[in-house]
Amino acid sequence: PNYLLPRLRELQHHNLLRLVLLLVDSEDSERPILEVTSMAVTHDCSLLLAWSVQEVARYLETFRAYSKKPADIIKKRHDGAFISSLTDVLTNIR
Image (tube, rainbow, N blue to C red; front, side):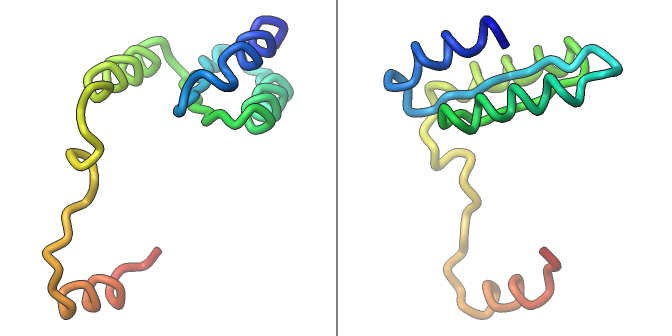
C-alpha cells in the first residue's frame, strides 16, 4: 500500500483505463486486499486479483495482445434478429 497510493495519484488523470493487478501470495491476505480494493475504488481503478505468478503473466500477455486492437474484436456479435434475441433473453439464467 505504501507504493500503490503515490502511483495511483500520479496516474489518476493520465489514463482512461487504470488497472491494479494484485498478486495474492500469502495466506493472511484479507486485510491487504481490502486496503488495495479501497484505494483502487477511490482512485477509479479496476482491480484484478491473481493467485500465482503464471496467472499474472497470462493477464499481462492478454493486455499486451489486446492493447492495440479495436474494441469491436472482443465485443459480442448480435445477428439483429428479434426472435433470436428474445429466445436468448428468455432461456438464459443470469
